[in-house]
Length: 186
Image 1 (cartoon, rainbow, N blue to C red):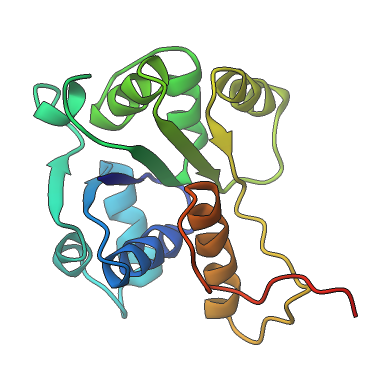
Image 2: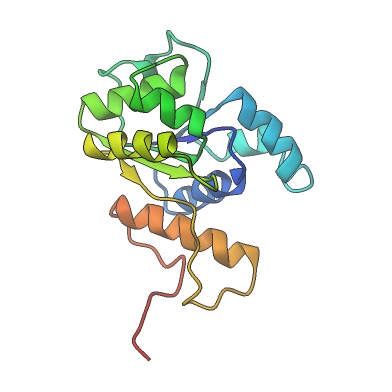
């Protein structure tokens, strides 16, 4: 199972598109959405998706504030956790072992159990403390995959740009995909 956590950073569409891609690939998913993400979803996706539609894309939904949820335990079986987008607040909590909600606790479990943890930060510019927190997570085995779309594949739409990031996440999870045109020497 791949767990997807959507936090309160801008770019919640990345999380939604990752859920859709994994559903198409018939890969079991669990979803966590932070309270700030619910607010951002209203602002960024109001016309396209509501919260219940997003939840329906996952096989399982876990409340981000339910600290006694089964997903918080190291005995809960999951392969990977992708936090997409990842707020700097969430990155800070993870880097400092501050498991204040289900998302940061599951990330703590992923790191301590040596499972895949992928953070897709969506913040700019970055302060030293942001970089230090991400470096700390990386040193513990987490993968930092910033939401920085490329342009070599000649994107024509926002969808092309989000597909690139989703495809890169699938790549680091070792899931074959054709979400974007790969680099070829001209």
